[in-house]
Length: 274
Image 1: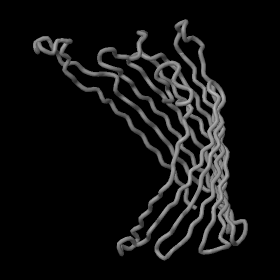
Image 2: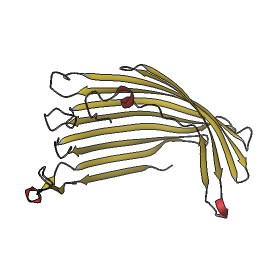
Image 3: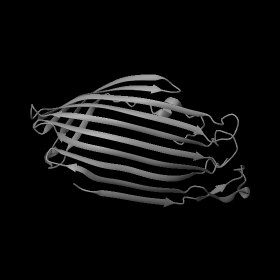
Image 4: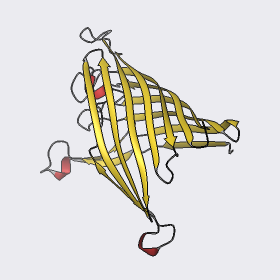
């Protein structure tokens, strides 16, 4: 099994010149050329992947995503905020495949994620264009397991179960009396269940499926969502007689559950996690 490590680094200073008419667009003599500052950013990332266990019946692999970024936010020209957004992100995951028998295979994924973000305003002016400083911490863990049945080959059946927990915390860093020490802390549980099939018909393959989710939100807003999504997929190999050209299409009802930010809003203006 392969061992990989991907590193990336990017830095940019994107200041630019613009013409400021001084609020009098009809008088060209009053305008001057200015430089728009505080537009740079810095980004660093590392993505490791390596095998943990290998046998004839089982394979387990670790992979991770690590990132850090620092972004300057200039704000509107009429009210420069000179803000700064920093983010530290980490995801660790274990993925594995195990043959439970000659006709049954299990695929599992276990993950943990931490996303820490901080927005620091560079101005003390209170307005919609100059949001308050704040920081957020988003943590989640989850497990997903899938059973693939091959007893009825060439037909294939897949059943998937999972569970995910997410905790979101938002804290104001502003020292004014109206928002000082205000926080928002919320949690979300997610339980996905699905069943899918695969039916080969010559070079065509038909894939009917139904995916269901149960979401439970706790915190500022208490809510529940029970969502079901029937769908059917089609694939065609060697499309148009061209070898190795594959066409895939899916029809169905698709949905996306509200994010923690959409459910709980942004109590302190622009949030670092938005």
